[in-house]
Image (cartoon, rainbow over all chains, first blue to last red; front, side):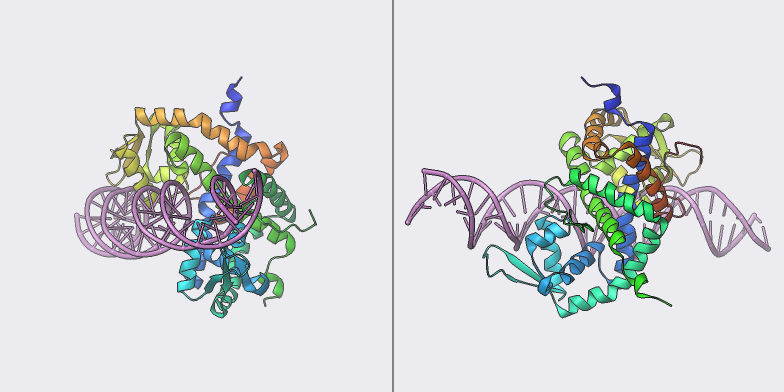
Length: 166
Length: 166
DNA sequence: ACCAAAAACTTGACGCTACAAGTATTCCGT
DNA sequence: ACGGAATACTTGTAGCGTCAAGTTTTTGGT
């Protein structure tokens, strides 16, 4: 049995949904254009470098890096190749598993992240966080957890900060 | 004066931010793959058709359509051209303003939206709305308004449902 | 020990978006 | 009523992501 209510969204659902898809359309452009202008990086490239910069030995296996950046392996492979061509990252075979590839941030890559971070953080603050109250920041975290549980049920992609254990 | 606190995010800010960018990376894929598989449309194409289907005479000027779909005119122009080639939309010069172009949904375009809508709505429910409480849906709307005010300050793009006047 | 299945990538091709540049009209200040 | 500026697109190109397919290595069952 399927009623009309299952086939469309009510006003409150529609209002939330329209805002969510608007954000999903607009946010990437805001992030990309600032980083591209000021650091010559896309947001995804910056994020890859930033994740590597926080890893042990600034090194991660491609699969682990893909998980932490919410990317497919194919996408990551292309991006890391381009970053390697620019000297920001280097790849080498993983000693423990010959199938795997490790990606390591180079000194130049580290410098690039360090140089880009302040401007990027300022941009995130001014376009996102500064518009929210402390309560809304917490609500957004909880809403995010609820959505990600369904967008990525296996958790293969999202490896996130968990402020308290969990 | 710039303190360290301005240059990085604290744990709660970082938790919210990481979830937001994870959603922004994952949601488009979830929407696109269902619509592409079941209806041969990208989410943006579907959204363009859906917006047209609700307009007077199923017709809108390109600029108005761009606003309502959060898109640049250049992007919309390419998409509408492709939709026109598939017979889902037709374009004709605007009588009142010779600079402008009107886009109108064809009968075939209407059929495509009607055919695609139920599956799409079910997908939105199962991947997004069903994971949220009623309170969270309201919170998401408010958070969305706060973010969009900063992502698109001029409001040139986002024309949204406003449940109460406002 | 063997072999099929799974895992971990890489690669090539294609489609979509952003950016830059170009055209045609309308608006507006004087 | 004239000319510069703004508006409303369109188009070409270059770059990034997805999808499908292929390679190599490991795992797990018998």
